[in-house]
Image (cartoon, rainbow, N blue to C red):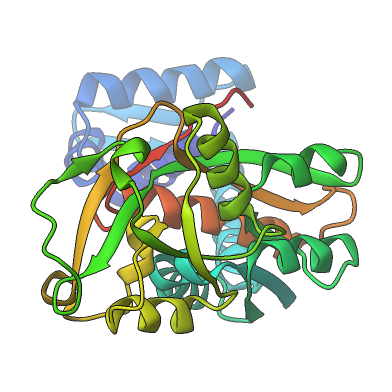
Length: 316
């Protein structure tokens, strides 16, 4: 027995006509009649008395009609209760500055829309620091880049592939020699002065591995563990950098300020992983937030808001 059969039966009794009920329910009359017959078959009793003037409930039909109305009301109340219930709690999410520049506001808006009673605590920091905070249980969820960090802690973390980002040679249009090329290999950088984050962070570990594979020694003139300061240094012509496109995401006039040339060496991509405490340690609010975060990433990438990013598919 299905709820829809109860709804069909109640409407037939209320209207006193199979044809009018079929029209009201947007059904073919034969389909409605078949559902009523199935219901009578399951109950092993006749519920409706059919005549040229319409249909009327039998004695059993009257009794069933009252209980069916009550059951439908209870079902509607259950649906409203589920819709009106609010997931509550607090969740701490860590994002690197480049990630936050693209993902931060979409995640906040999506959480406010879907789970308005969940208090979101956003932490923006370099990925190496975020990994330490996750290990110390100061974060529930973080997007991290260094595969070595994830490998060291898989027994304590849940790690899901998220996406990969192309890396770009980024320089100032106003203070550096104009770069005409849209794509470069690491070997093409020559002695170009580079400003990079330090070793403990995910992007630098990715770059160091790429430099080693290419047998290229970069000319690192400055190391800065602050994206805002690093990009300000690039903007003023103190050097160039190697970053994903999201590094310029907070500059409204990025196309006028910076030139981006994609690095085309094999494997020179930043791998993003959605890391969290193990599932048995996450609250329902944190589990929901993790799903929303993954949805936001997918929407940003598929919508073209994340230049050079591709989703990573994985088996659940």
